[in-house]
Length: 226
Image (cartoon, rainbow, N blue to C red; front, side, top):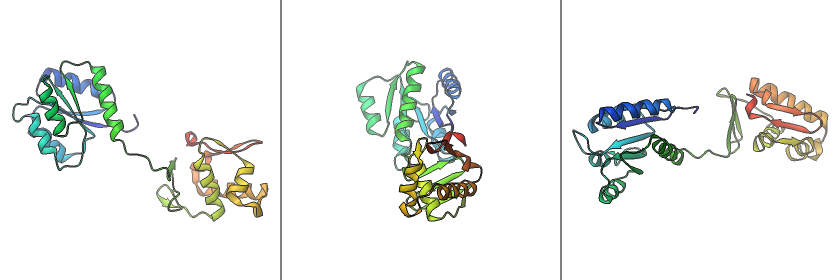
């Protein structure tokens, strides 16, 4: 994964804690392990975490108490890991805000699958009107372009061409489509299009290399090229 998700493990069993921490780190996550509920709450105040793995039977306070304490804080998904298999315990944990409940003993593969599922469910939904490639950020709603965080001033024709390419990124756009959709019939000339594309590439810096010529056909914004 490109960005390591941070996981807080609150588990008082030393043997299980070592195993889970090592396995989660090996799977590509950044796992912090504490043995007490109070320590876990302190960790959540001091650093951001993407997910909590919570045992219910802790030496200083119950996992139910930790779940209650998490209410009113910024939302963090919680998976309960517990030897308590009664349905009443599961219901109480879920009612208190737990997102999932895994009964001990469990397989590491199942735990990792549930972790991935919870992280996917909480991942932010990408804004279709904001596109990034290389060092370029395009906001179609605000009609703005940033290159390495700095404003990039494009002419209306240059922005129209870039909009057409980013909306169909990683696909080939025919020359005729760029001429008609991005530039208008009154400017329909390949020489003019080539000139606009040349200036656009230059303004985008090294990320301009993502605008690839598909010889004899058209152009493609290849987001994997930068």
